[in-house]
Length: 508
Image (tube, rainbow, N blue to C red):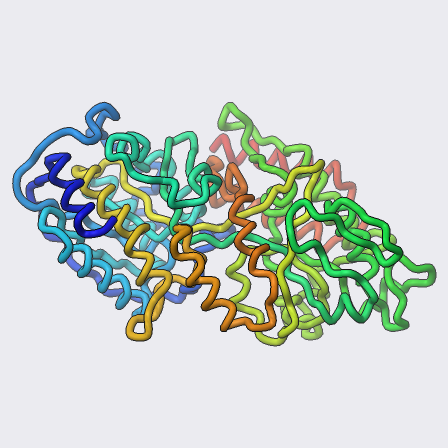
């Protein structure tokens, strides 16, 4: 919203609120990467015994009824607390941009005072749990991803009534991104900082193998060296990846005499997407939790992706390296695509942070499964605490952050570097973002595939809520590690064990 829109919005809705107790500005820093908050996945529970866990935090009793969302009138100036630290945002460079946005918002009107509250990442979950349990939770929390938000499942305000009564325009975003935040809790966020996935590939390795590049656009077919056109699906990617997996004698994995014990280059890897939820979501939407909210399940497409991956590592015609290979010095110690020995990966956009040695990569379409693209989008946004005393004022401030705030927080300027290294969800900012990326990566020719990935979010998110989320996510990590490290598994048996373990975790 611009200044006039904010003032008009406030006037029409009669927003004039009493001042809250002042909340101190807690300067902090964290080692959490500034480029993305890619969820607290796989982490151990960090809450100390003397602090309540998020699940124990008191449920607010004064959540406004939807029909009263835009009603009510108070006197004075509303103070809205913005809690930063559950994800990215606490580094000094980021704080500078955040302060500028707060100043601009507060100067644009005189009915809402936005106040930053910064807590170091390592303690943010405990601090937020304590505040919520005491009934003194902040109004706005973020940027935060799905994993961080899941620790406070049930504590988020449904924004739908405020969107409706205010006439807030969601058409400024790709509709798929708006749908991404439709959950069992309601509309829990608005699109802000997004990292669509795409297929990264190396042109040089395709050229050396005499292979055509992957499809630039969704719906295009892949053309094999003999001219045969194939649907661009995961089966086709597997065949292409085999032809790009080369042993020390120069034979590919599809050729007779290939030595799978002397591979010098692989056709594909999941890079840093090694979790069964990620593998599955790239094939089709789904969840490890059944509709009853407490029983573990394995979507059929997800099981297929796990078996596809296992065969790719340990089968007779491999096209993926195992964990030891990808962690070796030859494969850049766990960043295999950057080693130059991997032809393709599928990954969210934030991986551009970490490609330093490969200067011939480009983007292409993600394969489909049964004719449908699964896709996956990492995303950071802002949430509003369900117990806020000023839900409408918090909503107005939040819409500024995801609106005009993007110009500083994501786009940045010569004077103020961007706080968050993401693709802006707001369509109006994307052309300028693209122009900047074209200068940063001049060898990349197909930014269309990057932006097209916005239409393929994982709904529900691969990081969507599971009971006892952190423990359940960690159990997924151990399952993926088992597949990546162990040959000759009875995979059906291991899947059954995984599900049984999740049932126990969900029931705790």
